[in-house]
Structures are given as C-alpha cells and as structure tokens.
Image 1 (cartoon, rainbow, N blue to C red):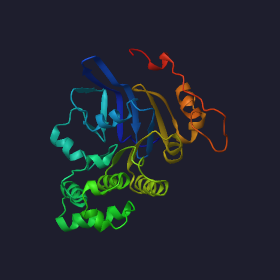
Image 2: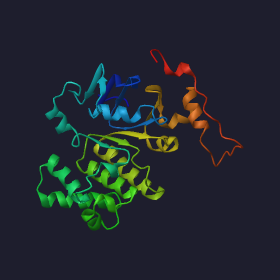
Image 3: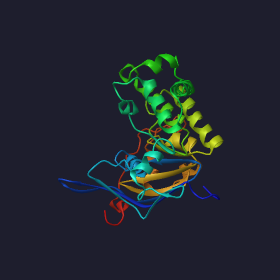
Image 4: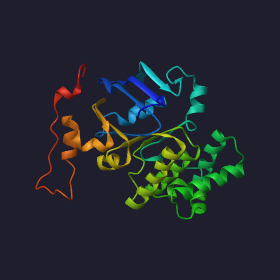
Length: 283
C-alpha cells in the first residue's frame, strides 16, 4: 500500500496468556499497516494469525493481555477507546468473520433474524428494511433459496452454508475493514470463488480494507495484494502477493516447498525444518 494514510496501523502488538505452566506469548511484537487493500496473513496453526485479528477488535479472551505501542484505526486509538466506542466500531466499521462461523451463530434464533438484527443495530433501519437487506445479502453470497435459509436455524445449515451466512451478516453493514479468518475454508471451489469475487468487489468499489487469514498460500497469492507470513507469533516476512514465489525467508520457502504442484510433480514433498533462530529475541 502506498500513498494514502493507512486505515489500520499496528506497532509492536503483543498478546500474552498467563497459564498454569507459565506465560504463553501468542503474538510477539507484530507491526504492520492495512490500507484499502487486501492483506493476507499466512502461517501454520498456532502462529498467532487469529489472535492478531481478535486483538485488533479487543476480543482477546481472559486471561489474555494485549499491549501495543500503537493500535490505530482511522485515527481512533483502539487500546484507549471505551467500550461504547468499541461497540460502535465492532460490526459496523470493523467486521470479523471467525473460524467455524456456524458455531458463532445463536442456536435458538433463526439465521435471518440474526443477520437482520446486525443491520438494525448498526444501520438504524426498521424491521422490514433489515429483513430485505438480509435476504439481499444471502442471495449475494449465493445461497440457494434465501427465504428458506432466512427462516432456518443454524443446526439446519451445512458448514459451508453457515460460513456464508456469517459472511452475509458481516458484509451487509458495509464495514471499512473486514477481518476474515479462514472465510472460505468450508466452501466448495465454485462457491469459494464467488465469495472471493464479492470480497474483491467491496475492496475495489467501496474502498474497504481486508485482512484475509488463511492457510492456503496459493489462494492468498492469487487473491491478495500483500502477504504477511507469521511464525510463532512473529511476522517473519512481508512481501507483495505476486512475489510470494520469490520469498526470501527460509520459513516461507519451506511452506511453499511443502505444497504439491500439478505442473511440477515430485517424488516426495519436503518437510519443513525449523530453525530456533526464527523465534527471534526474547523467545
């Protein structure tokens, strides 16, 4: 991202948990910016990707502790903002699609009512307009028979349908920044591409910023503008998505080497060999 002031500025973000076996440093000194662009965050499970996204919205569960030299969203200091300000920001200006979003839905409320409730809370619209908007967004994420899905309960949806329902809820409020944590992992390839096209349109047409958390390096390389590679709570490499195949850090190179390639088949995929030096100081 160049030119305009970043939408989100993160400097020296740290997330720590006191446990019975000692201090766990889930995120260790992460710094990055996000403009009105698509920024991918990749890395293995446990590398700190999801905790970074949760910390931005101050959703880190107890006994977690979040500190940062700077956590600024569009001129708002997120660390100092009171809870009322954060409630106004969450869902409306910054939205987040969590992993396994189906299990984030209220099991005793119909899917449509939950989506409409989000629009009423953040859009100040009436019940009829909220219902219309919910049906519109369910259709936008390629739900077959949106009216049926609107009336359905979460347990009546497949994993992929639940994922699309949560995406519809988050996108309908037209946020400035969307944090999407594995948003297409439960979708088949055809629907995945349709949902990505919706996200791409929002970024390019509305100027939304997107943090796209994923394990899929090929998907991130083709969809995002920039990539942050995380290992053990740290960002070990930042580069343009189009240059991911030319990554310099051995960890990123190892992740790429472990991917099967149809055009270059090998007898045996490489196994990533980790170096303690990657942990950095204070590991």
